[in-house]
Image (cartoon, rainbow, N blue to C red):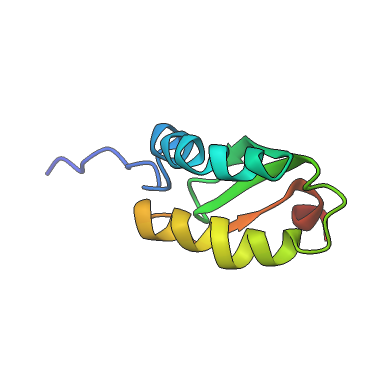
Length: 91
């Protein structure tokens, strides 16, 4: 009996994640910020992004991240389980 080769975890497709970021980018840039994809974790489904510009010091950036960016990302890329910033990963 031949066992099939182990398959890598089916995490978020980085290209699909980048497409969603490109859709959201103009709205974020309109507020003086920007967003950069740092990476995706195939095992956990976590996407790490870095907010830049005005978003860095904005008190609403946490709400923007969870209620906006994460919600849209999960809707458009079902393998995404969470969207975090690099500092969030270290906590």
